[in-house]
Length: 578
Image 1 (cartoon, helix red, strand yellow):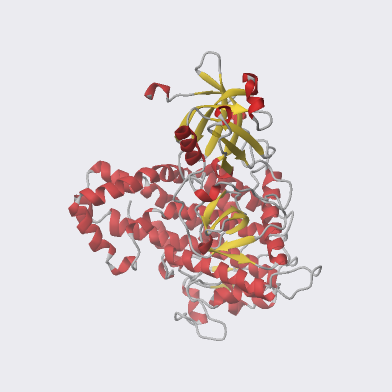
Image 2: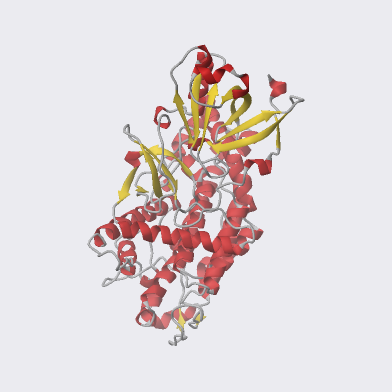
């Protein structure tokens, strides 16, 4: 596709959301035309008020003419915006933690709204709506309550971040995808492996950004953006699914090409050293669509948390968030089989006397996937398996047991901290040999830290941490976390690992303690839970079936439907491969 379409050129000349801003008490960062000269663009704006919001009466000011160029003037690539934005979230929570540490219990904590704006103001990398020249000249800031300003900033960030994302996509397209030297080093199939349907993704962003800018053009006081998010998620965001699914193959093939194609390797080195990429790697551009769609969901959540309850804005934010989860699932890994086999499930007290009857143990067949364990019973035909129980792999624990004679040899305990019925279960299992026992223990719980442990989950006052350094999972029971993620601390080991549950999506797993810091203040932790619970309850109310919940602040819906709902019987399709 061509980089600058006529629509985008026209859009840049006439529409919305400036990145030329005036710092409080200072001059504008970029020269602005004199007030009498702005009429050249002829964009007439009248302020409108959303009757659903805190500013109940329409605000009247003189009509303002302005010309703002978000696409042309956006200064930062999306990777830079994203890192800065997340660092600001971290600093905001740190200051909240400190500011509220002396607040008496019972008074509650209201996060100072000015704190969010102050932190963003301190960094020149992110524009504020309130710092727009036309907003400051309008007198609007003296009439809006601070809560409304916060909502305006939340919507404005969604728009400006989309512009930053589009700018990074342009670099990916013009600097990498259409570079003739690089293209000549690759076969047609390798080009597809690397870039997939990125041009379709870019067109989707182009349409989305155009509608967002047109909306902001209608009024200085932004009326709504989540309805646009919902509309595009329904109609256009399916292209993200294709891209994210192909991402697994993309990473593998990039490593293969980099190792085996010297011409490609040399061309890529030169391209990555070019000033336009600002020291960022090629892979940081390839992963942009996956990062953007997950970040977009968080930005919609941020609007939802600030919207007035039972308002049109809240309803639109709920619809948009639900559609993002439905149309653009967060696909991290496919599910694959790690190990399968038959073991004996034992019952009764742990003594040799109980082993004299064969009725006290019976065979079960285990299917261990990278993220799930199925405990099944083989059918009489031997071709199908009835699912008896299941558990996510992160919630498995094993305990080796000492041999107590031949009948109690090769026995270990398998603990399901939370099975498909959301309750803890313990299985005493016997294998055919010592080596088989050890192999099962290592497969079920590959890390030493996940053995011989219990957990105290489901506690409303459980400790919370926030991520201060992104971490990519290295093993199936680990959790990839991003800067500014807030997690419940479910379990911690002496050797520096923690198991947590991310508040905004309920995903669980292990990560190093060094990449997080504890949120000390109890009221701040409670506020985090309330905000997430509001999102979860709102989502649950938006559909008859209810949304997936991960919060510990209230009754939690199962993270996944019962496995037996999917597989009343399990057909082992890998038998033919054996």
